Amino acid sequence: MARTLSPETMATVKATAPALRQHGLAITERMYERMFATHPEVEAMFDKAAQKSGEQPKRLAGAILAYAENVDKLENLSGPVMRMAQRHVETHVKPEHYPIVADNLLAAIKDVLGDAATDDILEAWAEAYWFLADILIAKEHELYADQPSA
Image 1: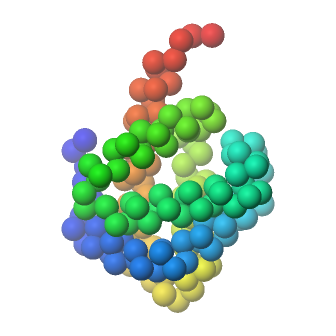
Image 2 (image 1 turned 90 degrees about the horizontal axis):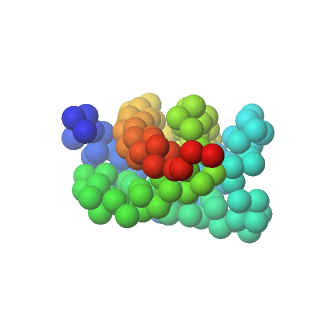
Image 3 (image 1 turned 90 degrees about the vertical axis):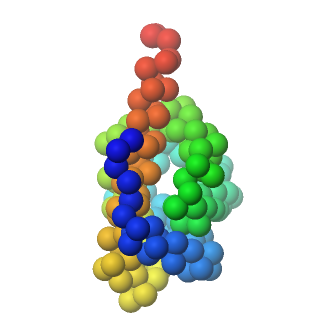
């Protein structure tokens, strides 16, 4: 993996950790609300019970916070990333789904944080999102290839 995040992006993302600790759940709840309204076809990929109970938005908020806190030491996230990739394969997530999440996550950050979500912060999070998405997509590709043919 030749590509890395810039030091500026890592610093900006890390600096958002306190806001994510405080507002992460509101951001993920808003993201799912937006995403399911604009792309109802992806709703079936998510555990309805975990959505209804609020567990899914809590898990995602925790994952985003962990990423912000460890963006400069991603080796700390290798286990969670592998579990996420496995879950994505189980629920048939494909590379074309990542832009949907990106658009709705970034919009939700702006919706919840308002003016505090500056262009610099949104650009850093877009870069960080796609960096992690590329890692997940590559791992998911391997996992899909390892599945027995039907």
